[in-house]
Length: 394
Ligand SMILES: *Cc1c(COP(=O)(O)O)cnc(C)c1O
Image 1 (cartoon, rainbow, N blue to C red):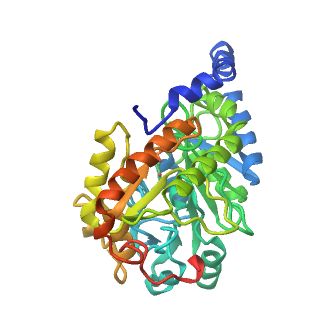
Image 2 (cartoon, rainbow, N blue to C red):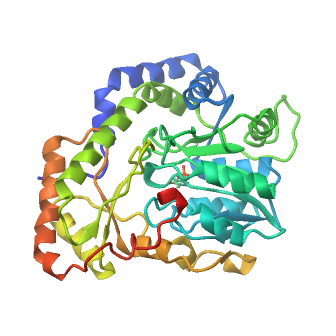
């Protein structure tokens, strides 16, 4: 049996009539850029998010730096985030001309640790970017409290958490803006690239709308800007898919529960931690090996068996040779949790259209490997999860 990592074509076939109808509608309308389908999707996405505004842009990276720019964050300013995320989180800070300052993540959630943030604040700090990594929300209540105390802006990088929420907050409620990516592999994805940000601020909405369209909101009148628009064809695909996102996320949660039930007795790795009362939407289901040297061996075992396991992300941003440290980017304190996450993480196949047979096959192959090495497993949690729990991971 082969188990793929993504189910893009399965998903298309499941709702092909709805997607095709919207594509046809756009094609026959003659309006392909900033047309009625984009307006419709923006209204639907704002309603889904529970925010006043949603602005479609070209991709999730642009959404972050356009938000930074709209908030006036640029050269000379510092932005605090964590290094165990997709490169784009820090790349966007770099593109905006600001400096990324990295602090550690929580050992359990893998999201930014609120207790590490204050030590990194300087007079130049302007913003915090928490990432809802793997589909579980960062502790926005704690982050918002710190931001308010120090007069900082907050942008949620929600590329991985559409439909997630905390026990007492929704994404977009406790921040200046929440950005997202609709690249095909995200929980809500189109057939290519696009992204959006949501906000309750009329000012950010107006600024980003102008910035994404060559600094223009009236014909022939321009100010500083870019081309970062979300095409109407993609908006049509996303509008069709948005109706299914909650059911798809429910299905992801069911597969996650099945993985967890099937793997709970294993000795060689730790399972992902879902906080009680949080809705984790499992963009990724990530296990962490108890020895770093086991990671590549287990991935190879799975790949050889036909299971497309991957790693997210095996090189933390501060470990990337290509990151521009010369601009003053730095880590504050040590980041052992983030580094252990990078060294030990394995993502198992996770998408709504998996079958029970496929999930059980993956479980069987993982257990096969675990049985071989269980006797060598250290007692207790592995390096990625043995760090001291902070307030938010309880
Ligand atoms: C995917 C992703 C992005 C970037 O999105 P693009 O649409 O590829 O630009 C940013 N941050 C995180 C956490 C992501 O997973």
